[in-house]
View 1 (cartoon, rainbow, N blue to C red):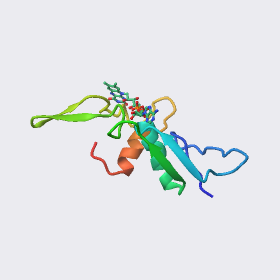
View 2: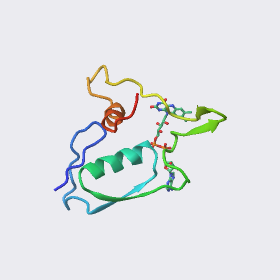
View 3: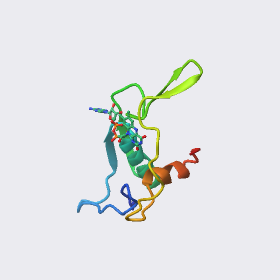
View 4: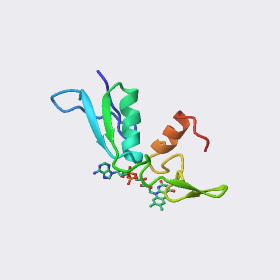
Length: 101
Ligand SMILES: Cc1cc2nc3c(=O)[nH]c(=O)nc-3n(C[C@H](O)[C@H](O)[C@H](O)COP(=O)(O)OP(=O)(O)OC[C@H]3O[C@@H](n4cnc5c(N)ncnc54)[C@H](O)[C@@H]3O)c2cc1C
């Protein structure tokens, strides 16, 4: 049985009817993509519906001549929460995906 984890890598309790067979994710922003990533890791089938023509939501870059312009999010604000000492899940995902930071 698959065990999806939440944003902070804590187990999510399944409702009494058990593990979902298929999940519909509305929106391909960071939240939707993180969920898709987590469900993929745990073998849960999903369908992601994105209304716009690109993925990423408020993470968006565009080209201006030879330069790349960031129109939205482009910073990971710290690798760890100083109070809880938990790793920033966005940082963890970037590392897991081998992204250059
Ligand atoms: C200018 C700017 C700079 C920012 N900089 C940073 C930063 O440096 N670091 C940081 O951590 N955060 C930053 N943020 C915040 C960050 O961008 C957001 O917190 C994050 O991207 C939100 O992700 P989300 O998936 O929740 O929502 P969104 O990114 O808004 O994604 C929602 C998605 O759902 C889609 N959608 C909406 N309605 C429907 C529908 N009915 N059917 C199908 N699809 C639908 C939208 O098209 C969109 O793709 C910034 C935000 C802005 C605006």
